[in-house]
Image (cartoon, rainbow, N blue to C red):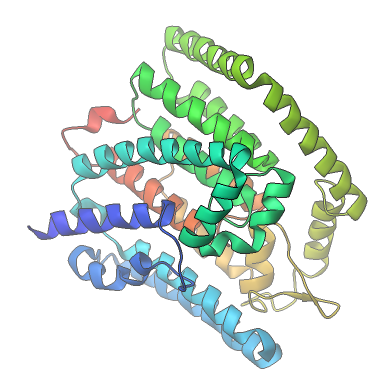
Length: 386
């Protein structure tokens, strides 16, 4: 087994770990902790990448150091979040050209097929065999325990994520990656139906918006022929009709529950309106507070922890305004074919979170890097890319 195969198998293990494996007692997956070791096999000594990496690390840990001096009560959480970001930034040094692209693309496609099936089975138990579901999740995915009963009460499926929104965004990211490849009609129908059902069960409005933008960008920028555009619209209408015909009664219940939740959140000032708008006003008023390296992940407002519900706000207040410019380096070389994954990233970045959840951020970085590498590389299954 050569270095290419080892690097490819490690990357595949990393994807499986991010999607399925329980977190256990570690704040960061073991697969990501092992990344520095596997960098020895697949390191890319690009001077600019190395400089950007060390600048990002310097800013993040300057923020951790400052927060340790100012808010010593939260130094462990600030350090943990800083280390998670640091591990994920290591992908800037990972050479995706040194993996077997044929193997990784075909393997991830099969993996996502079984992943969607597995999630659908869990959804069945979540709604119809909730006692068995709770027993299974408590034993296998203990990290889901804190919000398990709350999500059951609100009928929001979240798998092993505590936040259903985060799981909804994960499905959008995987769907955007799949649509970046040319799928057979049966594959397209299967993945789209599964993704739509799963996203609906999360009741995540942000994930629904993000999914809608992924479909729109697929229609406008990926499909080139008018005949295929008409076919895509037809297939989408058929798929949505099938879903509503079979699960129409449950969909009505879902939307009713979502409306009730929106009304409750609005009355508490934490819904789409009050809470989000208030966060942006707070951001504007505090944008110059420690502008160079921020004040740490655990933000405070009037002596209480402040959750901005936006990575755009979080990056500035936690790590300073300079990190925006360095962070945008990820998207250098952006092309139309990247736009679906870009929208899968953009919505949670502005209205919820993706960077704040290492599973979402790492999965996005891996999939985005694979698509970008495949476009610039000759490999036998390059035809599989849209």
